[in-house]
Length: 202
Image (cartoon, rainbow, N blue to C red; front, side, top):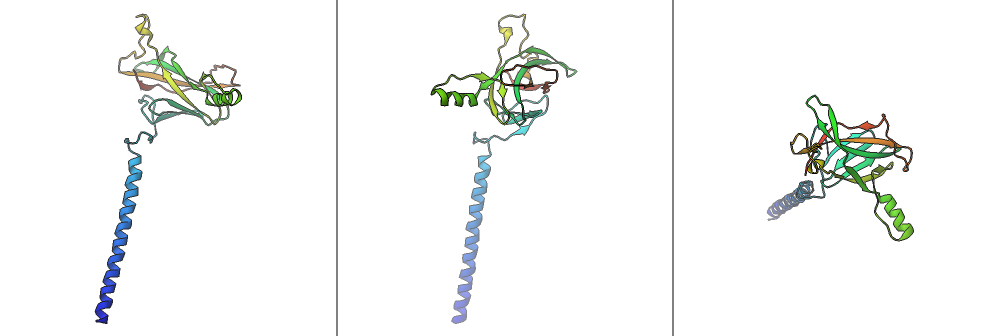
């Protein structure tokens, strides 16, 4: 009887260990699935960022790097981050891309965002604030810029269409202009431009 009891106890103990291991594995699987689910498109707060190449479509999560500037599209706005040590201005340009890869300027759209640092400063000093748009990005800061394109061809046929090749996309070139201060507007031959990228025309 004693031997049989000992055997039964060992079997029960062994079964208990396997049950604990099984439950532990289920818990691990649950949290792994949960983390994976958070990274899917079902959660709009999670954006999978990916570097895009010249000529690619600027889709959600796509980003490019120009000098010390990273421009990321979050699905609504462009996040322009300055990792350098100088103040810069960012401009966008709608272009027409030729078959040989060269391009011509069509128009300069609005590419600005709210100056959050100045906004916070004015609010603290005055208790009220008027939002001011800017294309300045200070070192270590991020500007959330909106691209606004006006198709002048809708006013007159003398103007070329913003989507000149009618492929459903605007071809956009970004340029980084280094500035001596926030009060200057300096354009130089040393300014760095990206290649053209496609962005859905609307």
